[in-house]
Length: 216
Image (cartoon, rainbow, N blue to C red; front, side, top):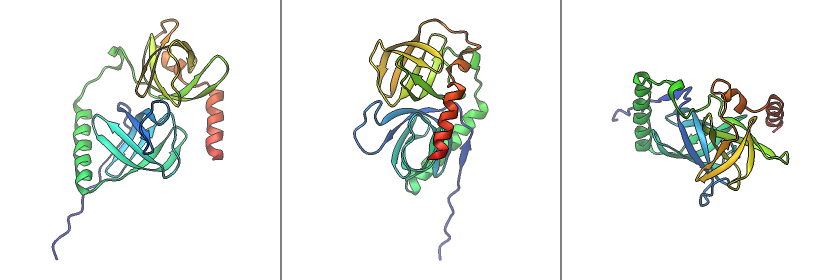
């Protein structure tokens, strides 16, 4: 019998710099309904984990897209407080292509030099937070990136341009809509050293979300 070569399993954990987008289900994409931004946390030969504003149901189809890894489709196999895991559905050739991309990306991580302080726009280390309106309505959202003057946000709704919202504990005005979210301009420029902490969800809101997730 011919020898069967076992295909290698590759995984890359602890990724904090890869932003992308995902679509829930198989319906046409609609921003704020089934199309959202996300942050990649782990990717392997057969699965990936995301931090995301909207957590799909177990078994639901999700299609993700990342510049470094291409478009990947699969089913939700685990849910977390801040996101979910997807089992990737692909054939042997697709798995080999993904392995090659993971290897190439990991090599770039070891050789690239970045200076977070020099970046005009910053990706927060904890991108999932809360967005609220003046009428006390609130829900989870994901900060794509931010600067001292504003933030790009993805959530399960599309506001009107000119609408007032609070991201974490910073209030601003919606100034632009795009395919996976919207841009908020803060009413006042923020202190760069303190801004990331202000964009995090208040402790009481995070505790409510934690209890809600555990109860599901």
